[in-house]
Length: 276
Image (cartoon, rainbow, N blue to C red; front, side, top):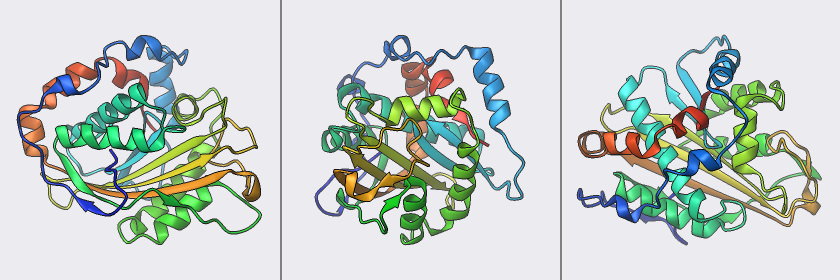
């Protein structure tokens, strides 16, 4: 999902002869990922998360801790291709590295996986994140950074609603469990939050704009990092990264769609939750 680099780079589409042996085996991840959520409970949780909004132009999902917004007009197959391919990328990177404590290696692994499954794009470097005031929340900082980025300005109203929705959910909620499990390191208090805004002006080539925010060594321990008021001077390091991606869905659908579904298996039941 993330294209790495110390400077902005442009990436061509990969060779169509994708070799899945290059991607870490993922078949055992379901067994190691236990949220204590049964399938019936998960389905009920999804229903409870759905809310009535004045703007029904988007659908939003929690995918392995990454919050993804996609257009409601996107076809089921195309939406599934976006969600599943990004989920595969997140799982592959999480299997090898910690997104919280090994961020650069995690980003590099994500880049390798993405180029193997027909995502291309460009990114800026992992850079220092500047916040104002004595304390801040990741949600507020994310909205401000989205508003300052041309590719994500239109995402601000959507993510405002997303954050408001998540703030109201209890700790036992499916999406909150996924968010905490995937994004927060309880031993180091590091957290990495990823926000993805998908558009599809061209039907075959959906575009994904991504903001990554990483906090390292925050002294304030919290299981709800999005809304937690962190003290600015007590966070060891604050990082951000913007990414713009494009999926060649025609090639993906013809060559990899079934393989990715098979590779993920039941992971999609445990780690993709619709927020609304």
